Image 1 (cartoon, rainbow, N blue to C red):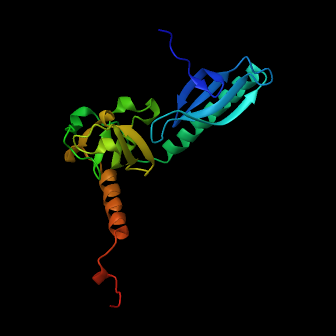
Image 2 (cartoon, rainbow, N blue to C red):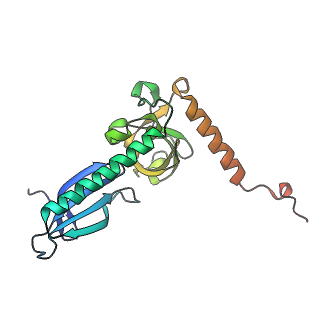
Image 3 (cartoon, helix red, strand yellow):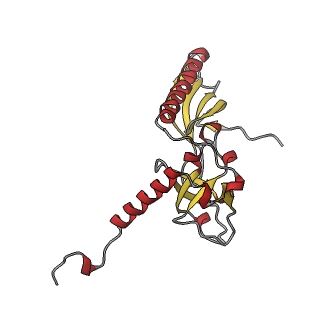
Length: 206
């Protein structure tokens, strides 16, 4: 069976290089006589995990398009280097032996779980990207047929979508780094501050 072509609008994807949180795309449409080459971004961090293309520019010349393609790649590398330089703690990736397995009946909402390193791009295979706080999704419920799990990284609070099978387990207490304990305590304080208080605690007049 012939493999289905990947398309960005009317352009067939010719080069697609994942870097950081995006893919940089170069597409070709030889029926477009004015601008047969397209350079854009793509990400899948959405409700259904589908390709979303944006920042598209068309070019008449292939070499000019390739220059723009490599320029976008370099920008993403520089962004990653800036992010990494801001992380002062050592962040070796978390291994399976450091985790307790997730059972099918486990409810994940409101819990800290570990993302499998092989489900992350190489540049994100570090503990600060693996430890996430689950916020919702059909796959977060115990014995659910759903897969999608929505979570925030414990270190930065950035939001991502994962599949339940991409989660490795619960980090064992003895392997929990000090920064994670601090981040979790901070998050719990923030939740307590935003939680509505009973009427008797609000100073309201009756």
